[in-house]
Image 1 (tube, rainbow, N blue to C red):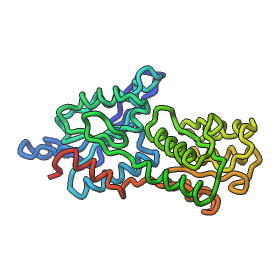
Image 2: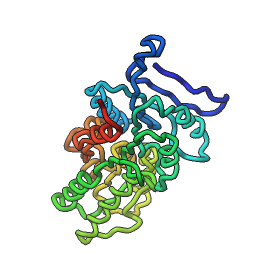
Image 3: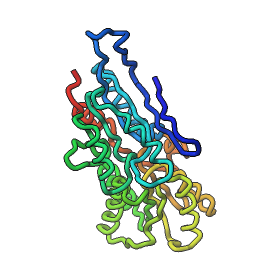
Length: 301
């Protein structure tokens, strides 16, 4: 079942509600059998690997317990950016009385460091139990991504095992908690090994494949770091763009410059042979994220 929000001509509108399990109406079941209340899943985009993998885990657990799920796909909770106000209008249509709990995919919903927009949404969902998946929110049950385990293992391998001494980090969008945590581990590891960290150690990729490609090419052509050995990317999307930028600069991978990503998405596994690329994985479903989030959304039975 799919409903769309109509928008004025010329304005961007991507708000869509997907009913993952068909709910019977009162006219079909009769007043003695009201429709089952679903768990509301709220996200700005579901076709990216991060949200898709997370959603698959949540759906699997809910199905195991016979609980329906409704996914609200709108836009980021950003005030003042063109188009987002219309696409995020879908969230105003959520009726808490029709749900038993709500899961917020809070990382894609808001890249801002301040949680104001997310907390406003939580308040509008009252009295539903709400779980934030992806970032910690004050006063809200939260399930966070374990960035440290994978990123630390990656950096220990690059610096401690492989002995690389000239590395640069391709960061995501400023204010994004995941990117900041991965950058922090990158910086701490270099300093712990007595390696230099300065403005030449960072490239702004903005979590965009195209932006990462352009920024990498400009970085290499500038000659700012002629001894560069490794480009460490905050996610795999940017790693793909970085590899294109490296090749455009006439460099070989990994003979001249090695490229590593983060997330271990399918694209990273098939882009190049295994000896030409690397990607650290995120303990997502294995870490019990969907199970913890669903359990915190209220009794399943």
